Image (cartoon, rainbow, N blue to C red):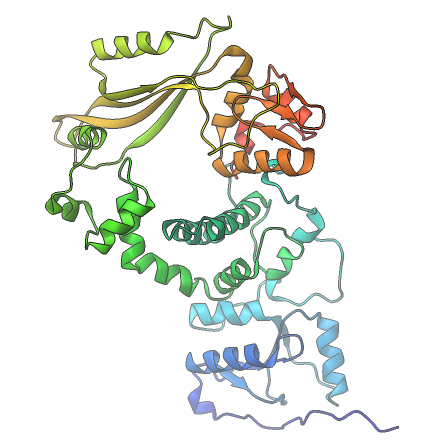
Length: 443
């Protein structure tokens, strides 16, 4: 038999010591499973930052750096190359990227050490069998992966500001999965089998884990268009298309908008007049109103508005009537995700004060929504949020149960009838889902 060809093992360094800031640390990157292009990139990056990274394995190597290998894998490779000495340190590539980020060789932590043998237990996320739909997952307010979810959410927002809602939704679904994880992600292996994480999202996550930041995310943050669109769409009543046209006309901030002579509508003028710094945006609060006797909720809005006007709370209000009607043939495909309740959009002017104690009024956007008692459970579920959780709930109903869910009702297309519910828990039961409390719907 012809013995396998062995890689040449050098007895010396492939690079002069004087070029290294840390001559006592000599690294060798194992190409196995890492790939040649990635190995070349990390080698060049390490040398650029003053680290000694040898091209060939030698007796002077102190750290063997590998990716997706166990300690046994590395030792077997060393033996196959005819080398009977194991370096002092067998480390994961995370040690190198942490060192590059710090600008010097860091201490070897437990997470940097290679496993001695593959295991099926531990805390790898793949063993958790994460559900695909956000409405199947409990997501608390506590977020263990904020740096990753913030990055994907920013890319989602930028996609939406470019009128690419499909790409934006993909990023938001990926961020929602990360937000639901019980532990912080420190290694890409933890994400094996995770749903909703496409190639683009995984690349962003990998960049952050290895270098502490994503070039794409950072460049997006600094782009003129993103910054301008974020400001302009924050103005009440201004959508992506209007903001984009303003940006094309050279308007990038509120000062330039005022100087442009653009006419603001009545609601925008009310917000601007009430804000202590002339901002055209404000907070949003929703009130859901019902009455235990069906039909008695009608006429509530005019009474509430009248009382608020007497107390000088209202800067602006606009009311729309209830236009929802059940059909015996079931609901038609909705033109939008908006519901049809009687609603009064208002802008409150709340008394406040500045640092010098001068009286000011702060504008707060408030929705007053009136629901018949028979629809209140659906209305409560639909208005609780988060937005993605509600969207996934409707998607589950349609795709998995052949039902149509809205903030008014739940219709079973198989049975050809509406399913009644007096509480949110009953709606989840109709959909064959475990009940998830509002505090765990932070998808």
